[in-house]
Length: 144
Image 1 (cartoon, one colour):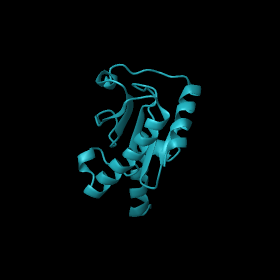
Image 2 (cartoon, rainbow, N blue to C red):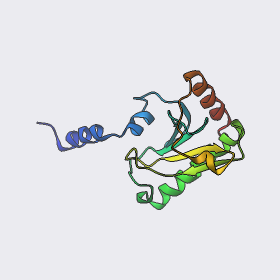
Image 3 (cartoon, helix red, strand yellow):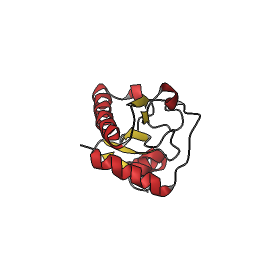
């Protein structure tokens, strides 16, 4: 009979979100940055080229349910990613959005924008794999 710990581990693994699986390397992604607590990757249906999703590795559904420390760490990591995006992608700013209804795992959208209209999530697109790889490498190379 499995131990309680074993059952908890199995339960956790079966509950892992798609984002946790991406951060763990179980599902391929166009990674742009990571550290021990966060993972940043290109959105596969971007609103604009260079649209990045930033997640905490810890699964928490709603951003405001993060501890204060985890929230501040996430925002600091997002800032570093945004600074890399600004260097790699032609844009006036990097827009920030937290919608969080699609996947029950906190995620921050960072979008290179030139106008407010560039933040329109109803206009998602698909980019060729080669372009996604080029963009990911470009942003990753500017990440500090």
